[in-house]
Image (cartoon, rainbow, N blue to C red; front, side, top):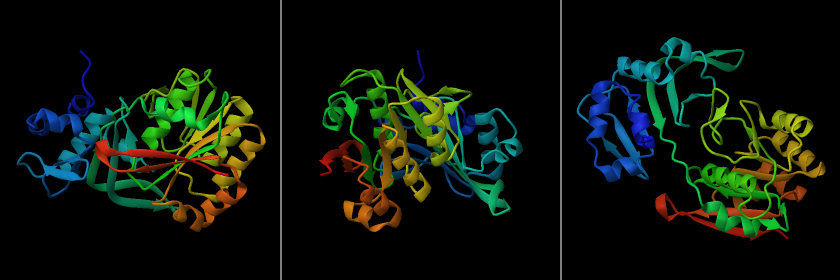
Length: 299
């Protein structure tokens, strides 16, 4: 019997915390999104907008160290030297966000010390959204360049991942060759060379590389029909996307914002809008199990 995502994460915890988490009601365990460990406070479980205390033992620095070492199968010191991005990807696609005192060298975070808190995010694949949306995003057998736009936490990456799966597996048209520029490892959650989140049979993944550089590498080496990426934030990302479209490749991407006015107001996004790259915009709303998706056609 395969362990549930919650069980996989709980297995990484020290014994006393594991016992406390197992006491949660089944419904709570199935909906849990994150386990938060903050030094000096009780552990909490995040479920949608609600954060609930767990157990009776206050989190200590030693507990945080134990969680890191057990989850990574390495010493905490070794792990912290590898977390310039601020998180650690685990088998199963789960990830640990890390806060503490940053050690900065040459203007960049080199390592962290004196860990103050951990956020253990539980990876739960959400499959099935693509089937409803892809017919609205395709023209014939070609994906129209599509932008998913919503505030943080609205499910952009989850939807992006499922659309990649759907395009790669051919749920609405013949399968397409997908290339994913997974800079932060949030789409495919690569672990020792294997994607921990299913992104389709015809998908190639380049992770840990800046999006602009990744697009150039993927165009030269992988002959993709579609390039997917998460969280456009830099002007160089935009220029790389324009380059990809010029090469005949379709785009699938996400961006942060509360409304289309946000998109048109920010300089980076304004350049993207003025370039006329995107032909479809997916606007996400709602929260938890009541999330909605609306497709707009860009004239």
